[in-house]
Picture 1 (cartoon, rainbow, N blue to C red):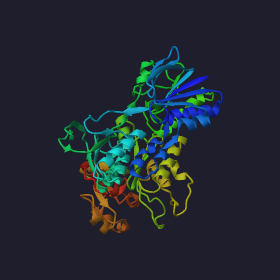
Picture 2: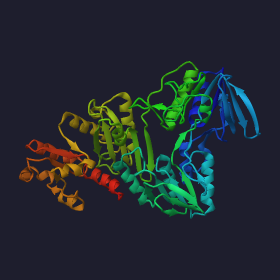
Picture 3: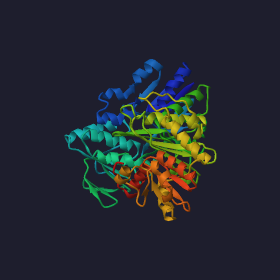
Picture 4: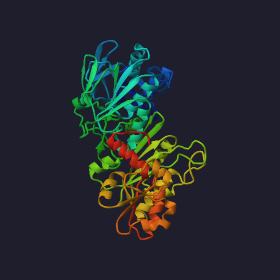
Amino acid sequence: MKTVIIGGVAAGMSAATRLRRLDETAEIVVFERGPYVSYANCGLPYYVGGAIRDRSALLLQTPESLAARFRLDVRTEHEVIGIDADARRVRVVDRREGRTFEESYDDLVLAVGAVARDAVPAGIPTRTLRTVDDVDALEALIDAVDGSAAALVVGGGFIGLEAVENLVRRGVAVTLVQRGPSILAPFDPEMAAPLEAELRRNGVDVRTSVAVAAIEAGSVRLDDGAVLAPDFIVDAAGVVPDVALARAAGVRLGASGGVAVDARGRTSVPHILAAGDGVEKTDALSHEAALVTMAGLANRHGRAVADLLAGEAEENAPALGTAIVKVFDLVAAKVGWSERQLRVAGRPHRIIHTHPASHAGYYPGAEQMSIKLLVDPDDDAILGAQIVGGEGVDKRIDVIAVAMTGGITASGLSRLELAYAPQFGSAKDPVNQLGYVAENLRAGVTRAVQWHELDDVLADGAMLVDVRTPAEHASGGIPGSVNIPVDELRERLGEVPDDRLVVVHCQVGQRGHVAARILSQHGRIVVNLDGGYRTWAAGRAARVGVLAAT
């Protein structure tokens, strides 16, 4: 049996090598339109920034090495320009020799991925950051201006932020333009605010709620009227599925614009399968088709296609959209849905903010992180999480992703037995702490109000009590708050009314919970400001656009 795979890198090469491991007799041909078939595309920004110094380290396999180990017929600079699904043949252009030919197949795998949105008008040297050719071009552009380069990065998503950080590390002056109101659209505003502050702290000119309107005479005009003069542009405005071949072959596309496949990677056309960034996945929360462009999923789904071809099919698991990115000294990670997504979908949710240390506070080097957990109020299911911090962010998001996959509830996080030593965590790990808070909220032991709800609650007559120390209150407080430290609450109960709602807050929510328990047992109607002053300050900064570090 002969399998032709269109496209290399993650999905295509995963399918090809897995199929060989399962079937030594299969004839496997891979057509890749670019010069490189297997490279570390997620490492490309870090080569630009100098963290990866050896360019050859990015090139994972060559046609020669793949032929030697896997007996794959890999043909680079060969572009498939047409598919005859009835005859089971593809039309191919050999770019090196300038000839066109046809190749037969028994089964065809589409792994062509996604392409840039082409959001930036031409006129100034512009590159994406998706291929080895891109980084080579960026290297040349930086070198051409001899260390005094100015760059415009369009798009504040994961790739855009990686581009920004690594260009700054190369001494490039960077302006970041983001169409939406905050960077990293999958994150909610109060979680993105510290990241935006980190960019500014490192000299990045961050401009949100703005887009490129035109490029004229070597300058860039934004739609707010501002004019920039970058030496080059990095287009990180996002990607769209590359579906031209699929559409022409009669393959059904989904509502998202990606190739529609079943749970095993089969398309609507017999003997044509698909995997990778150009293919729809099933969202784990909505169970509907969605575009999720993650390298891990592309690799996994390429492998699943090979399993199907070898007769060992297993359905693909729904996608959680787990992702992580480093922004200078901060790390941001997410899984599942954001509060914004849940609101748009009209889905009920409960919100939890915590700000734990990465490991035991008494052990040197502990770093504070901010965690947001989104929970279904009916069945306590975890709907999503976002974490921003330094050390330990990756570990906690992975634990939550595993919990979601395994059906562990938010309250169930409190019962996970996680590895502990002072330099790695706390006796009550940050994940366990999320579970305790979830348990208290579900049982009604405590009630909470969110940072973006506070103004309305106070307008309705609630009293706001800051239970931090007088020094903390003096260094920065929420307007209108009354300072009664938690350790003085019992002696000062007379200052807290029993005929209206009382909102208590501390720095991160923990002392606020203690204060709420004290007051509620003394007959007060009380709610805790979720995540405390730290979350409120980040949310307020995002709302007013004053993104100072908090």
